[in-house]
Length: 100
Image (cartoon, rainbow, N blue to C red; front, side, top):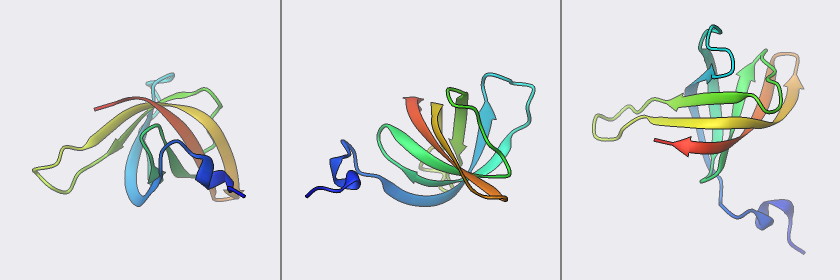
């Protein structure tokens, strides 16, 4: 029997990389520091400290590159899931709509 992970259209790559999250719906909010836990061709999981985001919120996620030869990843995405891990963090699932 196939498990849920086996039914995905795209494999997820574990990255555990620091990232910045900007709320496109409310540009006056400051940049949120987060950790991108995994990424695939169509989505990513982001762990935020003490931040819960509304479903449907539009975001820009930036993962800086440490290499001059590789550009930073910039993705526009929509929040499709927000699970509170504990009192200190929230795991946010986003669907990528555009990637540079």
